Length: 251
Image (cartoon, rainbow, N blue to C red; front, side):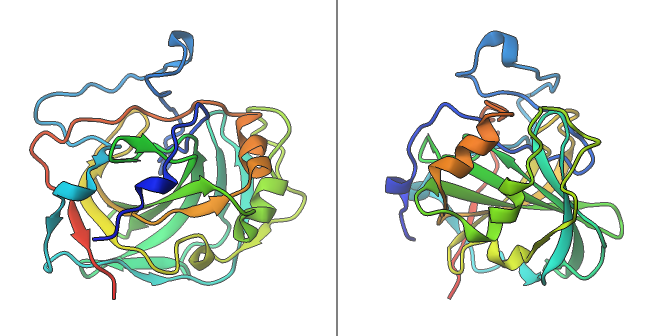
């Protein structure tokens, strides 16, 4: 197990929302009351997301496998959903992951800041969610945390294409932005697997989550480009309610 807690610094910014076609969001508990918009109920048996990841008390299971990524450079259309900035894949099919023998095709990715998942109680500066869907309609999401540091070259075109006005859903980049999703995830990192939900209303459960422990970096300017139009769009951490978080060691 590798500990990356030093990368995670609490920030009062806005985070990505897992949508999969759902675009509503809930702000973190630290946000002003007027900014909080959550209609999702939680019960003692709920399997909701996001969650805190306590690195010292994870379940180590060799039966839990890492997703196999099958990504290539593709065109994405960047738009403001009104709750986050989202990049929609223009052609569905070539980009996908295989998880537990099932293929999930990439549909979109979007951002949250601060991160929705936390490490040992601490959020990262930002979190990216890659949302995938199987032929049967099941969802699988990859969560990538970002710390402040060097500019993220893989996301440079994405940040450049952010509409100037919040909610500008009809105005996007003049041309689709070319991005290789393989460059959005860490080259190496242990992974956390767990069963959860969408992080936005209706917060549907049955989502297979894989969260990368090791963060990538974004620059202060890139973070500012996002928070200028969408501050505080993360959902608070939810209780585990008896669930296990499985750490997957990647050789």
